[in-house]
Amino acid sequence: MMRVRTPLATVLALSSAAVLLQPGASHAKRMVIHDEDIVPPSFALDGAALGGPRAPTGADLRAPAHLAGGTIATLADGALVIDPDSGDLVRLDLRGNQLARLTIGRDAAQLVVDRAARIAFVTDRRGDQVVVVDLAGAEPTVRARWSTPAEPFGLALSPDGATLLVTTVADRMLVAFDTKAGTARWRRPLGPEPRGVAISPDGAQAIVTYLTSAAVDRIQLADPSATRSIALGTARAGAPVTAAATVEAIDGTTTGRRFPRNAFAARFVGNQLAIVPHQVSTPLQESRFGENTGSYGGGFEPPVSHALTIIASGDTDLPRQVSAQIAIHQPRALAWDPARDRLVVAGFGSDSLLFVDAASQAGIRHVVDVAIGDRSCGPQGVAFGDDGDAWVYCAVSRKTARVALDDKRVAKITWGPPVAATKLTELEHLGFDLFRRGNDFRLSTRGAMACSSCHPETRTDGLSWRIERHELQTPVLGGRIMGTHPYKWDGGDADLTISLTSTMKRLGGGGLRKDETRALAAFVEGLAPPRVPTRSAARVARGKTLFASAELGCNSCHSGARLTDRQSHALSGTLATVDTPSLVGLAASAPYYHDGSAATLEALLADRGLVHGMAEVSDLTATQITDLVAFLETL
Ligand code: HEC
Ligand code: HEC
Image (cartoon, rainbow, N blue to C red; front, side, top):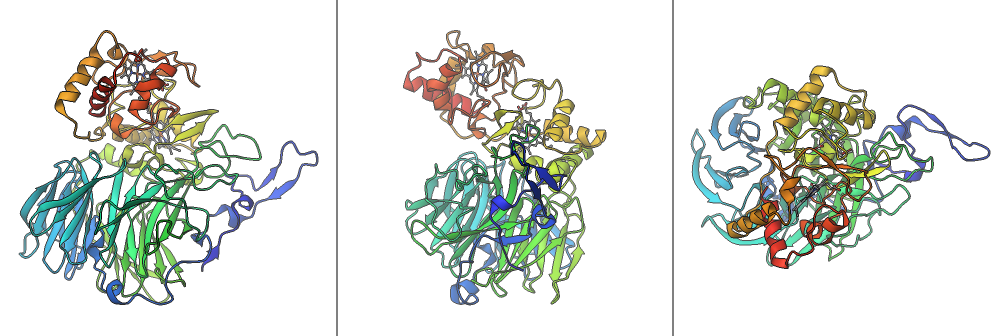
């Protein structure tokens, strides 16, 4: 089952043609592309596996599921689900039927269950709190609410249940709560767009994952100041990868820089390994056949693929790691069953699961890819039951499924009813479904890209994509679309339907039906802006005054509710004219400008403002720049 990957250079994937003529060569050479090269292998380990010689023992074998949170957890007599759409926490019996529910709040993100203590912790993403839920009685009840920095998301509970780790998105913090006292023991800053967190079975360390960084953080829990950033390697098998937050490009081969992205979750398995599922994006491809101007990335291979990176966590500063290319789309969540040393990974975009056996051993084996059988599932959470069945929570259909693998690796799937009703309109809900769909030929070349591949959680991947000979930065969508037409950086698309149609065409997709495009538009228009970080009110007020001042004149162009005049301006840069962007959600949209040339808002104001000729900012003092940035970050 295990396939060792052929060198990338020999794998040339093309959308339609199977034979290609190499232009420019005097004796045009015929290249034959084999079918097996076009279809991505479902599990291809890039080199020798890491891990121990045998199955987990000791602390590994006793590793509780609560070492990393998710949207579903199993109980001895059923399961508990947090449904972000409705904001409901729902208790299910072993058949997936509802027993009881408790409203947490819309966008609630994750839960972890301490089975021994019969409590659950839930992140209330909009309410900036962790809700502590008592599971002892028939109905779940709120035992306590702990305030967190803005926008709590990921959860992990230490093996002994004494420490709860919480990541927060807008305020970029990792907070460790003492679960007895209900108070914060320590907190430390994180990078932009943190999401998942996982603790090792021995309780010694934790890993935090990110959407827009090519690295994960490793924190020693005995000394949280000893945090290392570990670049996710996607090419060099088993070799240490230089650890530095700024190291974005891992693979320097001719296929162009490859950026790990969208790491929503991590999980430690036995034998001191941590597993991080993620996406790999190649926004600027190099091709021997010239530039493919009709594609995102400018090349001929799909610019988005998916991987599991396995990190040897016991190692020193430069841990060994290895990657496996996987065929499931947008791996979003994972669970590990210590008794069977089996891993399951949920493919959010492909409505499928990936099972891996001997996950912590050198004899790692791919078991099977299982299609869920519901094209509108959107697997967002997975957990193992005590009997070894995998439970799946579908974010789109809001149903749960139990998946049992028999000895022949054939899956038996048992569905439960939807756990809650959606709060979206019917049209928006269809748009939500379409937005995350991978493997859909109508949206992109061979379905390699979904909207959420580059706009994870409808935000930005922080990359500038090669499109029609320009590098263009992916914009944040939430809060920026309604009433801001025309669209795209050059303001070339008069309305949203035109813009979405042109996007699908550029992505190489066949296009959606009219009503489906309308649904996608309704979803995108209805999105809330990203949450803003907490900033000093005095600074924000001073920044606001500066922004509106006649000297700076920012609001002569950034005007109205969404801070855009919807006009194009001839600034310097690679585009002749640029449509004034909305400034909503700026804190979540780095880097800045159409070409991503300003890494931070400070950089934009300190020099790039002048370089682009956008505004005269050279007289601003350092304090004024700090004030203005504080204001901009809260838009
Ligand atoms: C490969 C990465 C990628 C994918 C996939 C992708 N986008 Fe984008 N998106 C971008 C980039 C880059 C831009 C800026 C392009 C430009 O201005 O010409 C953009 C621009 C947009 C805009 C215009 C925003 C504005 O304010 O002008 C919308 C709306 C949008 N995308 C929605 C979508 C939807 C819906 C999908 C799925 C059909 C999608 N995108 C798929 C990268 C991507
Ligand atoms: C002449 C009209 C104009 C004025 C005046 C102006 N801007 Fe802009 N602003 C633009 C345009 C056009 C862009 C896009 C430029 C590009 O991408 O190259 C932009 C981009 C930006 C961005 C980056 C947005 C993103 O998502 O990448 C920020 C932040 C910004 N402006 C803030 C300001 C501030 C602060 C001021 C006042 C000091 C200001 N602007 C004055 C037109 C203007």
